[in-house]
Length: 226
Image 1: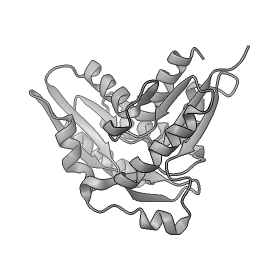
Image 2: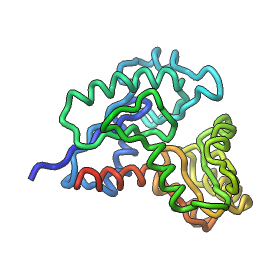
Image 3: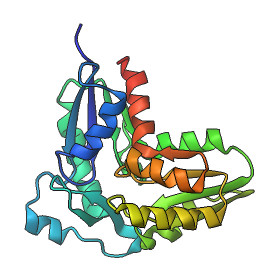
């Protein structure tokens, strides 16, 4: 039996070992072929430096193949992501996912699924009416956009900065801040967060928590039939 194929489009560059490991927790290698492509695969180190954000509203966080974390211009990523979607369309892919919880309305096309939509659906299902949503975000500069995105009539949003590659002490401190916020539901709102950081944080704040990468992996498994 042929394994289903899943295309993951990341905002930085491929490969992404840590992200692939999160998907493999749900989709073992025997279950599906996973192809990772980066929006900025065509750039060298100088090109990445030139793709720096121009302001808070233009900021995306990503982890490079080396494990180094950087901030990128959403405009530059959007342009590169469009090229990768064209590349992916030429391949035999069963499920394509834009693996970033930021929104890319200009890239919408048939057969392409967005992590932002998948995560939003999970939050709406888990906290459909009034309540408080706690959101871990990579950088403080993303707080304003985060609150604007997640707040609803009757729903309060509290944004807590936590870099996805943070050490255990930093995760614990952010989790304590989340405890003080007293949310009803917590979301790790970046595809770079890991199960390990979610589990550590949840052991401290004690609330139900959603991991973006896990939501996307489970969706891909269902839709592909893996």
